[in-house]
Length: 436
Image 1 (cartoon, one colour):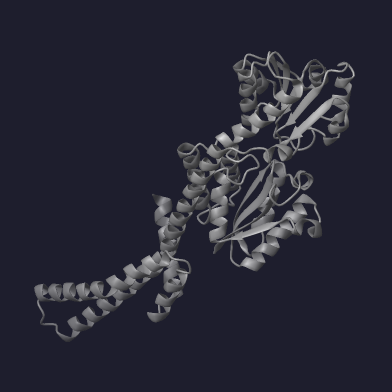
Image 2: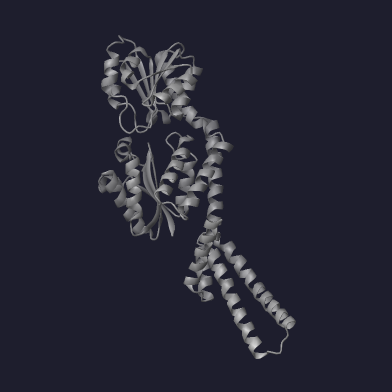
């Protein structure tokens, strides 16, 4: 069995395509069910965020797995295969592990270093476990990815990358508006990025911060934290009319701030300009807002190229080193675990031979006393252990290298080990782990 990931993200697809392939909770549940019902797939996890849709699977065959996962994504998203194919990426085995660890660390995010992906991956794992699609094959991989992501955020300053993006956006707003001190801002959304934007606005002496959110309780909490006030979504046009700056960052699928709402707000402003900063993906703000007189719109795609920070670059490089080291450790451990049942089966086979020969010896020499029989048995067992020690230790070491599985196959062939026995040992290991 091998790990396969197939998906698309901001790196491979346009914002428009990402918006069309976005899945809600019900869509994720159905895609999990569709995927694990496929012939070549045993386990699966769906990671669906605002800027990616990925399916991680434990597959029996590479080509069969790729075909089945692609078909399921096409069926569930409704996007035609011809349109989707050129934007899909495929990672297999070692590369799949590296990709997941990088995703969990925020290295593959639109806003590099954002920590929200950790929570999204944790939620995806929980959903897959509840649906019974995440087990012994993918479960440890996902758990390790979550640990690696947490380590990266703890040991590096990669979170600064997200702060830099917000900072660049607000710098541009300040330049356009002639400064932010004393200005009024409307903030749509109350998530982690919105919280970062709110604190940045307050540090720049913005006079009034109004938080607009679909969930009033969350909006109230963020507004209180930055000494601002909360407003309902229905009042958005009126709040924009009184503001100088609109910042939007929600996790919603589809447009949150329509061109019509902004157009109505601009009627009551006179010649006063409005700067709109869209930090969401998929986009919160209708791109047609850009055509409205007096409105300047900046979004993630236009801001990302403006982020050049040597300190952030060092943090990203440190994060990549951690991911590289962790991938190597995980793969070495995984390959060693794969060969363990073969080694155990070999030792079990050797013990069977020893027991059979000792029984034959006892039948031929019934006059042997108990002490002599015991000494002979211990001597034979020591000889067998010493003969097996070097090859079994060496095969475990070799299993940690690329292509290490072939050494276990060679061992099974050389010693004529019954595959059913090896499989039985592996199943016994699973039972022991479950009981502990």
